[in-house]
Length: 358
Image (cartoon, rainbow, N blue to C red):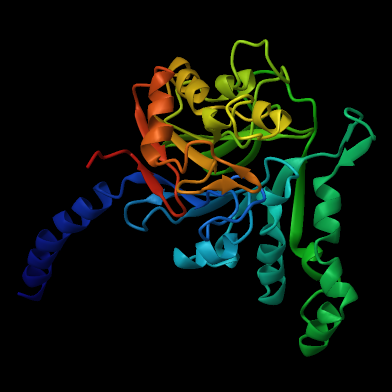
């Protein structure tokens, strides 16, 4: 009788278990951890950053957590998602501009303080730049080596080390595992720079400042391209458009393109006095719409908005016709011919693949 009872239980519960397993589908979730464009501070927006999570529906896409750029306030935005820096599997840096890396020191200090262990940091290898003068070297490695210097010089690191000898006296640099991407990279759809299981991250060199990289994440649930601040390799007009040809290669048939955006309202001669150099090295909303359409992208996700939504100015540069709304960026992208889904970035805006329209 007991065996009959157990057999009956198995017949009852086994289909339910199989049903649960069968419906644990892979998922990819993209969250903007910061959407402020450049060094200004507006309306509490965090600095540039994108969190990409991969997993399945049974664990809310949480097997793998990848952070792309880490601007001011990244650690706070992660905390709003219930995510600790200890949970990150890797950080990918597009370029050495402060608005993209200010928050990285905080992430690494947190991991050092709470014994998080080494964290992969993927970025460009050192690259010398001679134009415009003076000559200089853009160095992610140097940033990682020295990001804790203020804490070391102030005595903070030594004090914390005395409190717990498990902490490395070298400070947060000791938990950064550098994966330097050598340049130049070939102009092809991407070179794999990091991989974990079925998820691979490819990189391609793109134009903005020396050492700028754009990334693509491919997974069983879909693909996303992180363009960073990429722009056209021709510094200013005359040129066909403002977007990056290498990012367009990388974005071919991607599900999602996350990209910084410049609204045409700041174009030279439009009345804002915004610096032409800063305008021309970004991609405009209209040209990004055209590029995403050519590449076959399904979702265009704007971040690093210049100007920020609702802002009267960008730093000292006032908008000639008043603050912009989401519809202004969307209309500009549609003017470029994009027919897919447009997502205008605000902090913590999230898109999940597979996509389910609401």
